[in-house]
Length: 388
Image 1 (tube, one colour):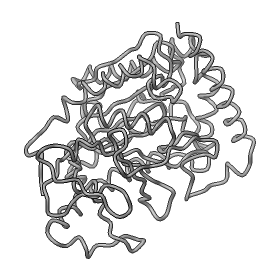
Image 2 (tube, rainbow, N blue to C red):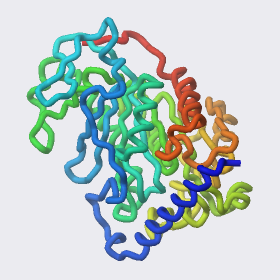
Image 3 (spheres, rainbow, N blue to C red):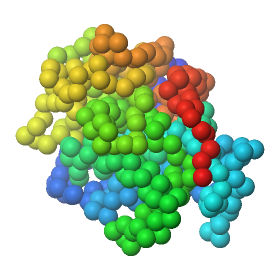
């Protein structure tokens, strides 16, 4: 069983989250369509970005879509610049790291990360998500791009899902622009704001041919959607290649309850009542259905075929209300010969490895290490690690 501290945190979390969900349902303004959207709520504890290397990772925030609030936080581990073969580190006048031009740079895989929060809360800039992404960037030796997708109910389905795939397309664009830059055309390319579109950290250090998707809770549903869209897109995403995905505590549900959905209906942190409220806020009223493709990964006719999916690591917890459906999805992937291992943590609760109040527990640390061990099979070096 979870210890007393976890139980206490769960009581506090559930009280706050249920209050938020109910207030969103009862506030007419929140249900009005808002195409621009929001990516964070006022109650969220936000960690400031720091473009200088702090605790081994530099971070920066960028806004990538002039027509929506879609934003990114990039986490660059200092291993990208401290290698003996890498270029000398350059600090610009603004106090942050800037890759030196005309020098060799170490290339790292790129991991797109989608935070949890039941589609209605959480943020890519929250203190908890910032700490988790820092940990993953260092353990996996990757550039983490945390996606600030638009929240419901201000932006209903498919807004958050479309934001996820839009970022994958943006990564492909960045990779192609970086090539243009090496050919001398970079300075002549501008975006909707009139500034150069090339993101220097990704241009210097990102290897998009080794792209991984990582989703937490509702973010796992988004990651799985993005993986499916990437399979459908094929070479249209070149040079981006999704080589693996990690689904941590997926927010899956369905109309026919599983054993865990019955037994753990009142479980820790996210329970059945909260889950139902979140789906009602996320899905348009006319589309509300627990077997919606966004909610249930096992419905018939979902495309592409499961055998086409990338290697998929699924992380579940013993006391997670939604565990059984995630396990069933992992089993279905293995049946069609997809590498789809399952990590099941005894005494764990929903999001135990990513919630800010549990991040420093031994179990959360072990889970992050387990994830890094698996993912390194798919992001190991291919070809030249350094490029100009």
